[in-house]
Structures are given as C-alpha cells and as structure tokens.
Figure 1 (cartoon, rainbow, N blue to C red):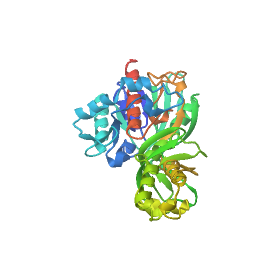
Figure 2 (spheres, helix red, strand yellow; figure 1 turned 120 degrees about the horizontal axis):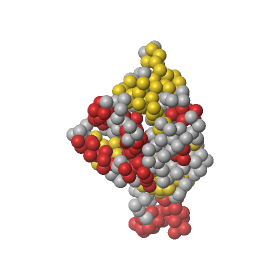
Figure 3 (cartoon, rainbow, N blue to C red; figure 1 turned 180 degrees about the horizontal axis):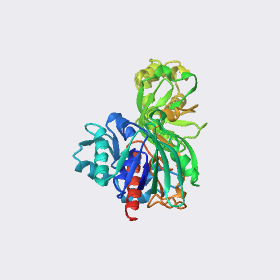
Figure 4 (cartoon, helix red, strand yellow; figure 1 turned 30 degrees about the horizontal axis):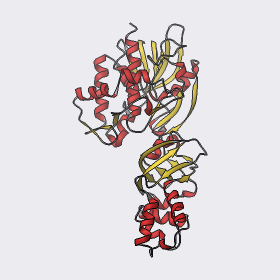
Length: 393
C-alpha cells in the first residue's frame, strides 16, 4: 500500500506529527490503544506542558538543538489547542498544567485532530522490517497474523525510548536510525529513583520532606521521598538525569532554615534535652531518629560546643550520599541519549543524510525536566516534522 507518510508510534509526538502532515498518512503502533504514556501520566491527569518551558529545561549533547522547534510551537500554542477543545485544566505547582478531568481528554483531542487531518491509525501492528528500495521507504508489518508491505516518501520515527518496557517500550527507533546510518548516543534511564545497597532506607519508607538535592553541580528544590529501595520524589527524579554512576549526591534537608543558629538557640532553652530529641523538632521524627543512630549522636544539647553544632548543621545541609544505582528503565519516566541531534535538522527534524527520514520525541537526544517538559518536546518536535512534511507537496 502506498502512503505519503508513515509514522511509527502513536504516542504524543507521533500523533501530534500526524495532525500536521497532510496527504495520505498512516500511524502504526503495536499497542491496543494510542497514547498509552499520555494515559498513565500525571496520575491519570496528564501534565501536558509547563508554562515556563524553554531550552534551559532540556538536556542534550547539543543544548541549542531544541530551540528552533520549541520557539516555533510553544507551550502557549498547545494550551490554545487544549482550550479550543474545551478541555479544563489547572496549574499544580511550578507551571505544571494538568487536565481537570482525565488524560484521556488529551488523547481524544489528538485523535480528533488526526481524523480532521485525514490520518489513518493502525493499532496492534508490529513492525517486521524497515528498508528503502531506492525510491520509497518500505515498512513490512504484521497485524492479527496478516502480513502487509507499506511504502511511503516519508518515514517518521516516533516510537519513544526504552523507559517503561512493561508498556512495550523498545529501542526500535534507535535500531532503524542506526540501520540508515544515523549515530546513536548511549542511552540511560532518566527521571528515575535512586537505589542504595542493603535496603539502607527501608525503615524510612514513606517519609517525605522538602530538600535541595544536588548532582553534578545542578540543584533542584522540591520534595524528596524515602522508599524501600532508596530515594525518590521530584527533587531526586530531577537530579537523576544529571547523575553519573559512582558519583555522590548532596542533600540539604533544611533548605529554608539556619540549623546552626536554631540548634544554638535551643541549647540555651532546651540544653538538658537529648540532642537526638531536639533533632526531631527540625526533621520528621523517623528521619531524626535514623540520623541520630547513623551519626551516633549522643549527650544533651548543653554538652555540644559551637564547633559540634556547626558540624551537625553542616551534615544536615550537606548530607552526602552515593547511590548504588537507579531503578532503571523499569520505572524511568524518560530515556536520556538516543538519536544524535547532529544527524538531524533542528528546523524540520529530518535526517541530513537520508531525505524523507524524520525522528521526533523521546527517540531523539533531547530530554526534559520533570513537570510537563517532555510532553512539550513531543508536541514541538512532532509539529516541526509534520509541518515540514506538509510543506513538501
């Protein structure tokens, strides 16, 4: 069957691209329903963009690559689309926008826009082989036991990265891009919890507090959550994208306080109290007890010199920890690395060496922060590729 454009992947980027391509377009996906990552995101309400989205919120070997697409299709463009479809939304924190009702509203909106554009959607379709016959891209598919060969002038890689394999995530886009001669940068899990050996923090599982978390000189100021296996929460997920294996991270557990002054003042009024007991006034109880035991805090507060209090304050604001690893792709929200941006046009997302081949969304080496930024990259890159394809004819 002959098409003008074949899009591999009915996720956020692929569906967005299909709303723009024009001509005869087909979107292929192995899943039973489109936009599965959209559906589960944001606790089922989809953090669909961020009001403050900008190039500085993205990681890439080439930090300038994302600028073109983000500036030509902005968060305000997507917000306008959401509003035109009558989808109610709200800001949660830090510019994060969520649907009032359900993430399914975003999927329905994209399907409606695809239908309006004349794009066809084929689900439960697996990709057997992708090649080029000298004139067209050739995609061999299998659907319900039926084999079919599709041909097109344009092929868009929008199958995402390796994160959340239980939803069917694979490295398919990387494999196809590599077969066409594009460079693939090493991939790793991003926006992912840290793990520690011997269930070190198991007694603290469920304890949360606001912190400043730092990795490789990059700091985020949000909540941290202790888990049975290690550390999670927004601040930890954020710094995980900047962390490299074997490195230490730093945690300031009292970001809005001056613990040295607080402890010194309490020494005057509560000097007879145990140091560990006073620590419970500054931190969640279980955490205070855990640290008192781990740091071997003994004696009453009155017995502590200024130097000792300063050392304790420094530990509270510069707690250094070395994770043994991360939870990996199993729970990672995104995949870092991927298709090298040097191989693509930043304006059109088309491969420089393979006319008609495009790569968008998470498959590309552009990874956003937590908070709606990765969806915005999907919308912007999908729009850029779709618009470029529509302008060809």
